[in-house]
Image 1 (cartoon, rainbow, N blue to C red):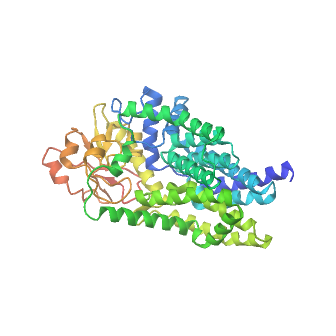
Image 2: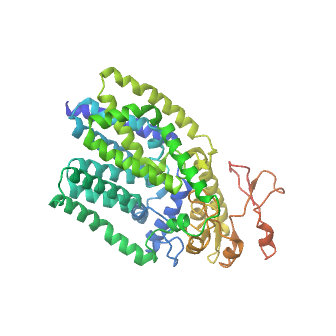
Image 3: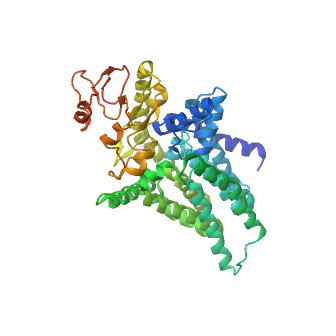
Length: 486
């Protein structure tokens, strides 16, 4: 196949993906948590949320540092995060084409996975969102491609960078290594060869110095968010609630990606390409099991399992390509159905405590306006207890910690979990947050249409009895529940 024709096919897939991602075109509140860290790194040389307080409230080191470097050059993360997310999405599509060429030989069929990914609502959505999702997925797929090609040092480097982008990168590397050990054992080869040792060394050369630095800098071996999810004694029924949430999250992934219908095609892809299929299946199975164990995620369209999404859709594409050419028509209903998934995802509501992208976009939009409205009134010594720790404090340039403990070491380590919802398991008790002497309590709020009628949190009376009083701002343009913010 001529180079020009391949370039046109790839360009078409990239164009479809970019257009699809622009349907969403948003930045989530959680992305702004990283932006605060990036800004403090760019302006003060400290990778912290509050200057002088070393708490690792992010789980995307490489992404946060990259955005900080661009901020140092004067480029705002609200823009660069979306541009980079889309660029890494297109790069992942390129890796998928390269991997299909490797498995099947160069042919027009190698571009089917590219168009399937471009049509996928979840893959397109998280090219936007402002998070590290596509950067992480790119490094995972780059590592998988290198592992299939037996370029193990290159695979080790790719998985090392994946682990610097998200903690799950270490899990993927462990699964790939275990798969290799099992394959070697079945071939009765029990001594690792030089390439395998170099692959492990390459991973450790990237990951080990970072891990040691992180432990030294923040004082804990794992990110603060780990302790939000794992620290403290949960109440009765909590574990079951987390399990149910994780199972529902994976079911939503299977339904929205149409894996429930494409399972026969995935099976054909596994059989036709057993070596790659075994590796892909091991990664997907381990990733989904881990996702269920941690309770899934609170953001919709399967952001948390994007590498599993890409590998599964890739296997389904291989299954179609193993059938007669008319089987390509099987992907027509898939592409059409993804339009309906995209449309549903834009509705600003939650589903079983999983926020759809439409709601995430509206939430971030309103908090940006709140932050801008508060900014002229913020004093250098103000300290806030926050609900969402991202957009509002970013635009208000406001110090503080969130009530869920993502950027609070005290809440993360010392509060027990109460709500089986990932990232929102903990709630700082009133007496605990008042020890910080906050001047603003922004987690105990209401949005409403009548300036004189509002309902604050159940602890409002406790706070008022200790000298706090409600304040109402009129903020034109709020979308969620009214333009009055108390």
